[in-house]
Length: 359
Image 1: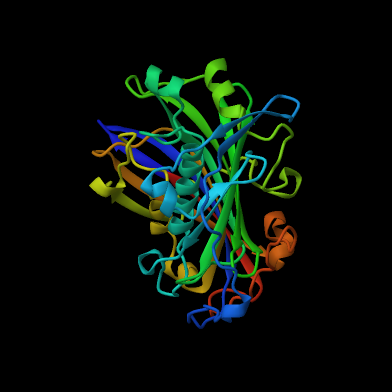
Image 2: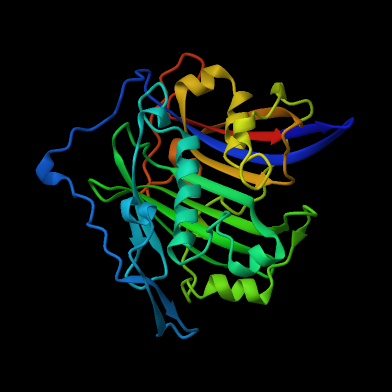
């Protein structure tokens, strides 16, 4: 739980649930060495079509032709899929994006998801000066804010690995937009992660949420799949389940967290990825050392500003039975079976579910 203290008031700003699987005691690198012959080289960038616009029946209604594109467009390793309804981009894991194990951190994964979502919007002509904002949104002073994010990581990419992320968006009721993601190891085409998120509109001046208007919905949905397409099957996942409440008092806490200037984004508030770091701050070190984060669900209740002070409160629940005890960690849809934990304080073949509240 993240608790925000401002003007003498304490308010819950985010609820988070994490799933950790035990990992081997050795924390060495798991980077693979791929033969050149077995590695698929990135495709050559061409710009014949900017977007394929389909009508409600799925037929191609028009094709938006591209020019040469910006310099960023020419250098970016991403493009729309053939039907124009999703976007794929390849990313190299940089040295500053990995942790002590030389594998990408969960914050890196979340940042890449945000980046590919924005690049998708830019590829169809949106998001020129904001996070995936459409022309109508910019005219009305509206922005997208994250309401919920669920990430499942089956295998962390290592330093210098190439990750391909596919993303697409869909309508989510009358008040939001849903964006899904599939992450693959570009060398092997193996699915290494999935994610889903819900986004709401906020007035940039009043900071109040606003329903998605028909004009904005039409601008967005014209580039979306006509039939529901879910990265994570909801019947087999906890991605939509309510995050349980913490016991009072919380088992663990880290208080007095202050946003850095670098945590603020172009929407003038703390970026959604910064919350993940706050969440992990209150986790016991022995869990961080002996387990690996495999899933995280974040509910964003209100935005956090530069001068707010945040408390991270967490509770831990041991889950016996390994991956079979948690639906989203079963060996389906490309996911991996949980590894055994080798730690004196934790049983073998254990999973940990942690609930964190940011106040």
